[in-house]
Image 1: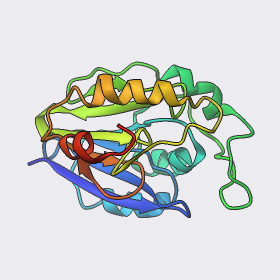
Image 2: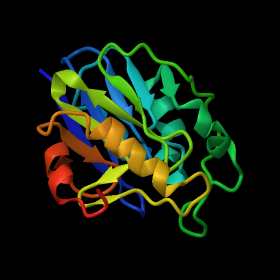
Image 3: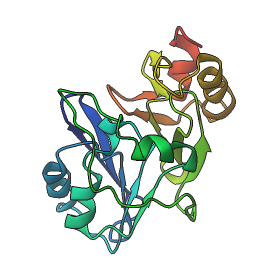
Image 4: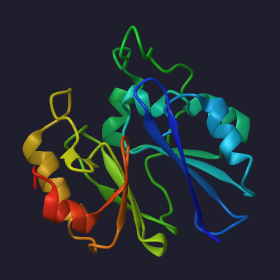
Length: 201
């Protein structure tokens, strides 16, 4: 049985997702941005052989809980697109005084065997922004690329309006309308709903 658990964490209310395609096998933890203890408690409800952290991008509100979750759950791998590595390691990657820089971050990998999901490269919010498409679940984890009725900010370093719009149109809107979209903040939506109703598209 597949499972998707949402934990909204931190001052900026980042959506962290715990995803299992099949009960008892690998657990995917997408964007553990803060409050690692709460994420670990949620994971305790599941049975899994291995845990992997997937990062949609490297803004601090999406990576702040990486070390705590990794240590507590003996995570084997942290994935991040290589174009976001500079942001991941930057001393300026913080939102002070509210969100300090993430510390003791592990070295991420830049490739993953895409057995349960496909990595869609969707730059525009950051240089290395990606979405994770779990075809079997008909679900897309969109990070801060696409929101219900909106799109990700492009006024931060690495952001670009034309780039994010092209990413959404060419990658996300190429998926079936029925695909559920879980964003980095706010409520879930569907590809079809955003195609029809998102004012930016």
